[in-house]
Length: 155
Length: 115
Ligand code: HEM
Image (cartoon, rainbow over the protein chains, first blue to last red):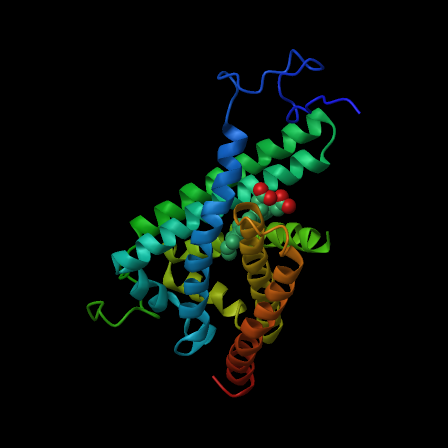
């Protein structure tokens, strides 16, 4: 037996002298994305379980959901921020997850690029739309008559 | 292996639903009538079963996601990954049973019980 020490995988060894894994020009995007999946996952457990519990379990559950229900929630900054954080984290987490899946299965370069372009456009549209809706929402729209929250002035 | 397949499939299913769910919620910006009409579709029994399946997928993805995180960051995670998979499945049943009883009661009693 030789007493040769085995280098760590892909380190700059005699066998692979050109492989420099500590080069600072190397992008850390994939590592940040990997970490983001885990951090956002933990936060999403709290946000999504809270969302499902309040909307489906409390009161009359899904039966109670109408325009007035949403208006009542979004008249409070607490639920605006909650839903905004949930929207951004879930969309970024889901988009990055689907990006991984596309990279895994779409083997032709063109297919991969096309699918990812569609993915990014769809995600951007949904994130912008959702954010605008949360912040430009009017709980008592002029002319509306049904399902208004109780705090709206009587027409 | 199967937990990984399950995690992938539930991840994509939840993502597709989320795209639709942001669109339907955006109708609050159109008019109360438009929102209430579309959300009414979520209240019939067929959709109620779909929502149950969706929550089942989210709860599995969430618990198995926490297991993946534990495998990656906890020193003994890889050693206990199999026990943690059982924990995930048991926790999934423990959460889903009360959820299903409550949600399906609301959906079915309101649909057949009047209004
Ligand atoms: C409820 C809390 C959640 C937790 C704890 C969680 C956790 C995780 C973790 C740890 C991964 C693995 C990432 C990796 O292997 O690098 C992952 C992947 C993924 N997640 Fe989630 N996630 C959650 C919610 C969501 C939501 C709401 C969506 C959809 C919008 C989603 C979609 C995905 C997708 C598509 C993948 C990629 C699956 C794959 O590459 O095999 N997740 N999730």
